[in-house]
Length: 293
Image (cartoon, rainbow, N blue to C red; front, side, top):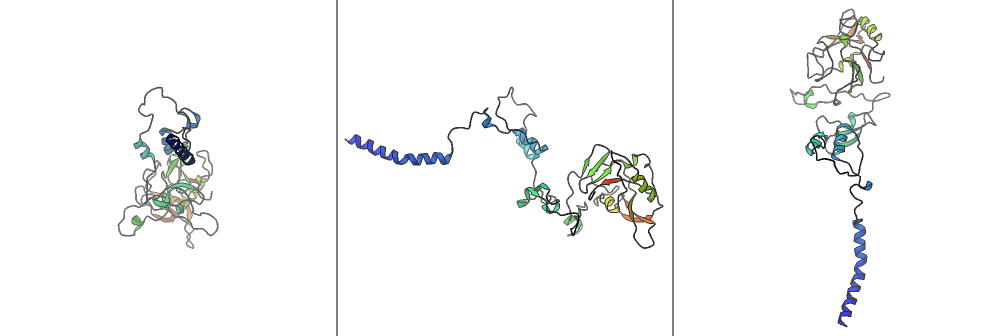
């Protein structure tokens, strides 16, 4: 009789605990594994996929595990250190903010806090009552509190600044302008020319698969100047060949009344800009495309 009472009590406790056990199992998810390592349901990415995604943007393909034919060899699988080197790092000094990037364009923000990760640009350019975004001068050394080298105001220069187009031209990723790598190696442009001859030369130029070359205006030409450098005053690591530290014509005319025979030029010795009589012979650097077409 005593034994039957114990069995009865045990049965009652089991009946009471069973719903609780089932509830815990449901909350914890399925207890069985999704599948064997080589099953399609267990497909996963490798460290190599992650490394390629960081370096080149290649998405990779999730795959089921396969037994390797041989042991690991150098170069096959990246190390954790290599992954960390390839991953973006916080940059609160030069990292772009949404206001530095054209509205609607996505980019990876390097600013700490809410400025980190995938971001969307908010800068409005072109047409209507909009504000033109001015780039930084390139100066980084500071000589007084709140001078240019201290504040570094303006749109951050992209990295890389220039992209090789593979046809003797490069695109300035800051302005969108396309410049010839070695302009003085072009036929007919191995010397200095007067202002009108410079305009005519650029207009008749066919190079790199394009025939819409022109003489840059003074702001376009001056956009190449890096105020942290001189002789020539071009950005560090620029791809150009044979650029002299001398005066280059722009297509912009000096606007003072009665002085239309003068045009603006830019010195790539130090970035100095001034005007001279259009009969003077200066260097010529053709350009094409750019903002607003």
